[in-house]
Length: 104
Image: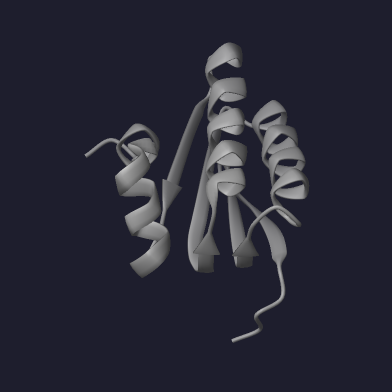
């Protein structure tokens, strides 16, 4: 797996799926936040796929939360899927995972 950070947008019907790979940390969180907030402005639903992410720190959690807040302000939906291992644990411990989970 390529360990470098990257973001890919896939338009899927009436939503944008943002596939993220690599590490989300102080060096990449600002760029991710900008990409996610831009996607939120363009679509009523944004789904962030974190399956390719191996590390997430507090700045990454903040980037996800900021995009979630932007979506709410616009009346849009924002979800996170695919978090595994360390990333899932960070989202769970911070309480953000439950907040960003898609509806059951």
